[in-house]
Structures are given as structure tokens and as C-alpha cells.
Amino acid sequence: MRQAEQPAKRIGDCPECLLVSCSDLVPLFEKGLGFRCDESFLEESAINAIGRAIRKNVPYRFVFVDLDDPTLLLGRFMTAVKKLLAESPNVQIDVYACASSNSERMLKKCTEVRVQFIPKPMTLEKVKHLVALYK
Image (cartoon, rainbow, N blue to C red; front, top):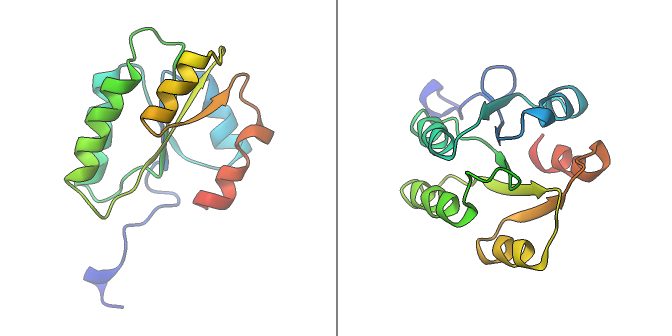
């Protein structure tokens, strides 16, 4: 394979996931699963980080958002993410949501915007399937 055709490096040089308002999950993902993570605490900065990673040709493999953050509106966030992905058809980023409540309304919203919901507390057992998907 010629140098220009090689895919972007992943392990060791670029974060594989973006945690949005989920700083408590950093040890779980980095130590428990071996993923490198970026963190964002604002919806806008998360969208900017996703766009920047796509433009650099090292998109995140997945994004976790904490729905307990009242400043994050999942529908608006996903509209922005989908717009970025539409501009880069070869990129796929899976988005997961977590929250301490799993109300019917919240689950319905996640289904509507095609986000997989994982109830808190987040444990290694709940997210270990990510290793098989993303490593």
C-alpha cells in the first residue's frame, strides 16, 4: 500500500471517543477499555471537536453524551452531528447516551434520533461490547 493510501492511525495518536459532559467516564474508557478519550463540557464545543476530527481525517469512533446535563439538547446535538456526517459520507460515528433516568420520553427521543441509550451507572459490563466493536 502506498503511503498516501494508508488509513489514518488510531491507536496511540488520536482519541477514539468523545465524552460529552461525562468526565466521570474517562477512567472507565481509558483504563477499563483502553480507549483514548477527548472530553467536552458544552454541546457547541463537542460539535466543533467532531467537525475538527472529521476534517483532520481522524474521526471519533463513538461519542458518549450525558443526558443529565441540562444544557445538552439531544435533538439539536444530533442534527448538527448528522449534518457533519452528511458532508463526509465515508465517516460513521456512533452516538450513545447515558442518564440516571430512563423515562419513556427520554428513551423515545433516543430512538427518534438513533442514539443507543445506556442507563447509569455506567459499568465496564455495560460498555465492554464496545471493545469488540471498536478495537
